[in-house]
Length: 168
Image 1 (cartoon, rainbow, N blue to C red):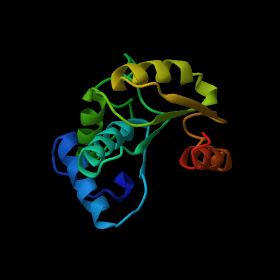
Image 2: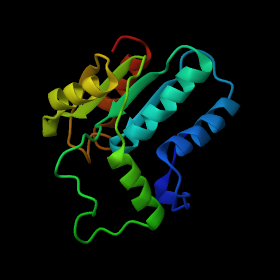
Image 3: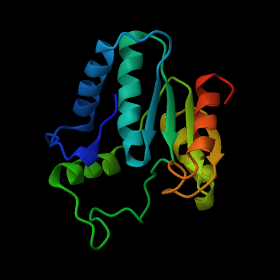
Image 4: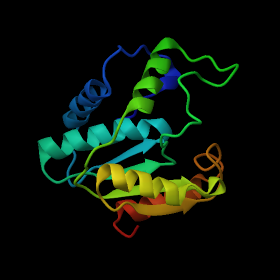
């Protein structure tokens, strides 16, 4: 299940937990077998965590959680977008929810994948490990925050395959 904010569908002003519940309802309609892998990217890592926690409570074994170049609170995130950036109201509300989210303990396996150009992997692992009270596995992929998922997608795909197959 993928949330597509580029489609400009209007999201109600729910809490992050309510959005996660609706994603889980959609996911449970698909009859998947095995342990699911939940992937979040940047600010959607907060939503991915909420989805993974709900699935763990409902269906037993916790999902693998993969956080792709995740955000972490810092002073560079402000409540206002950079000058010249205008988000539709629903997207702005979602960003505000994501930025205010505080992670809590997660019982499953967590992988943090960061773009190597930013050099953020050690800080991300430390911050997310502390918040989730679990030892996160770290992975670096080539590129920066904008290019790792596009220009370097083959390397990212190899990393994700290794994580999904248990070799990561």
